[in-house]
Length: 210
Image (cartoon, rainbow, N blue to C red):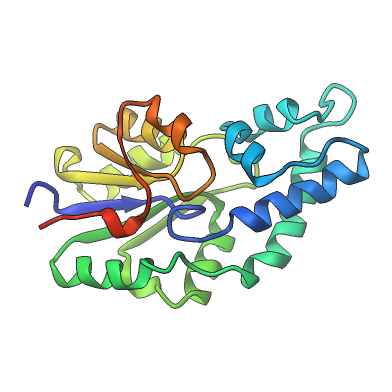
């Protein structure tokens, strides 16, 4: 096998949460009399750090501190997240990879406790050796946690594959020295993902490891 370990992104990659992310941000936009997002526009503007995305879609963070809409968003999102499930291919794929002997991890921009709860609620906690989320709700970067995960779990970056759905996932993979596959079924459009030069799939069902 070329790889023996897989680091999964969570939101958008395994968790099918784009719709609730758009609905949640639209609540905030509506309250501020700003233009609402369609899913198509969302896929073209969502970015990391999330503060840049807020400014891009019209929030005036000079008069309203970023923390205010960020907390409002996560409050709405967290109430809705139980209503979204996994992408259809997730459980069969995780099961197959476990049976093939791959070590599996999640590296997420979601706050740690919420990450653990949503993974457990979707009944897939047992597939992973570690769940690595952020310490807050501001979704700035996963690079530091990615490096920590590699070190803590003794992973060989050259034998580790990262699977994500955003340009930031590719940036994290570059920073920690592992290969990356991006899936165009999450929070950024396929056209944007292709600009990274990474291998971009239309869905998890296209992943082949044999």
